[in-house]
Image (tube, rainbow, N blue to C red; front, top):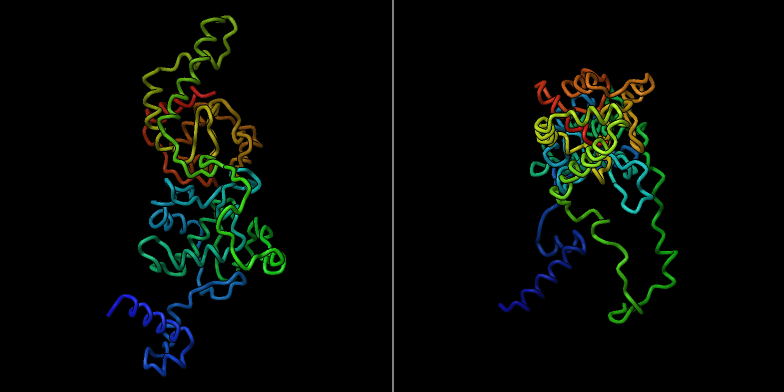
Length: 353
């Protein structure tokens, strides 16, 4: 049989099946789906909660389940790993040139998150999660976006009470009415525009990977001006500069290596940007919760209101046990247990002003 005849037969068969059950029955093909088969595919959850199963899950349980099933792609704090999607952050960036669209900043309905996790995650093992696990994961994603507190429990009963920040950010697609008047019956195939211009670069679209090596010299560049100023004007040297000049270079070098554990969430140096965690330039000696344009958790806001400062002791305690020293922080990093590692990181951070 020729390829052409096969194509004609397959096309006709497809058209017949698409025409409805009556033609399929006439041709002797297929059978009605059973109730169990329909139920297996009927998984969708609607914005009004239709389709949600019974169950519940807490932020606390969600953190553990997320770590085991989701963190390998989305990071421990939902900050994203490599080119895998970021699920948290991006608040108030939708009007920026380079907006960060996450579950918290962009998605209008919580049902979208629940439905997608339930239907398609974890990657490579879809639909292996129990409803309680899905509730817990979604609760943790909400917590990672500062939309609920750490003691929150998500369930079918309170699902619709969760308000998504961008719930009113979408409009009904009315193009059939609003744009139909200038649609053409025949599409334009050539010379459709007088000129074509490049309006945006890949770097702005955030699809060009950053060279990690390009960011490393920032530590040297940041430290150099302080050393020069100290040499030229020793009499005017401030205490912070004196302390910085006294830092052991070997300890700073070790701190740079240990800090790699923190780079998924924090940036330092020239051109640093907020990620899941704030920029840490100038953090040593700075007031807690003082980084500009970063939304802190309630625990940090309370520490800031109390006038607490990131001195050596406070930083060491936080680095050793983040959750123990700052009750309510959303940072789930286990901490640096070795005192030498804590000192090294503090020394490294002190070189960024």
